[in-house]
Image 1 (cartoon, rainbow, N blue to C red):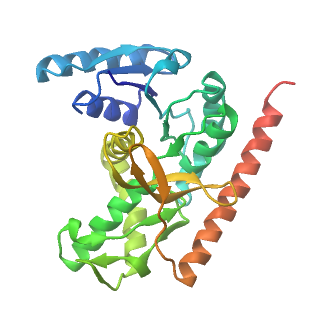
Image 2 (cartoon, rainbow, N blue to C red):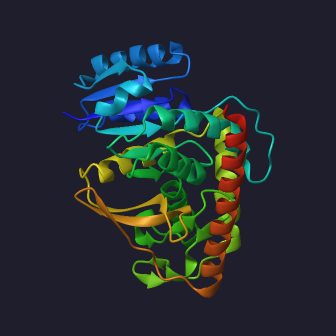
Image 3 (cartoon, helix red, strand yellow):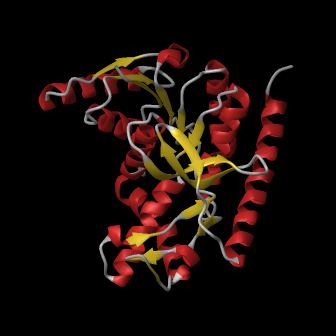
Length: 301
């Protein structure tokens, strides 16, 4: 019996929960939200979905602190803030989302199961949750979505099926994402990657989605459920997740999961990619130090 906790009943939480109801391997979904009303509404909606689709999965409302018995937890709340950025857009929620994640990490201190972090800026939120909670199995969703987009964009450019493309996007889930062009192959052969054009399209896609439907949801939700299947040992294979690097900074990197156990499998990087990855590390480390200093000032003695 597999039980997944989902904290956050917004766009991504709704999409993740619906995919879990349809997954075939999840038995119970526990939903938590800031005020409870959205959790109640989502649970009712998921009940209808289960009924009309003959799914055995059942959804229930729960508080985050009641999720310690879950096999895995998805953290995807979004604090209330206005994002007016045109660059580094995912950093807009650094402090507002950081305060929310800090509170949740305290509630789930020493939780023993895997945690999938979705809240942006996801690499920093993943590290914050892991550091504060003491949980040792915390991974961030972001680079897996970037990688899927990259493979799709390149496949369209060179007119091949997406499955023919093998390549990764690592580093930050944001403006300092690293496109691993030097190791990318099409049908197993090296290929010229028009990096500038690819980067432009990677940057444009989230905005195009948000302009059309208000929030990016389905892609991150699909990546989240795929990550859960890997970390729970349901599926073996490689997936790009945010995990701690050599400096302690959480960065997107390919992880090979076997029976739920990960092994880092970074592709070979050329000099430019190595430099870009170091720049991502520096940026995320500085932002994390800024966030933790601010949160410490906000916390009563």
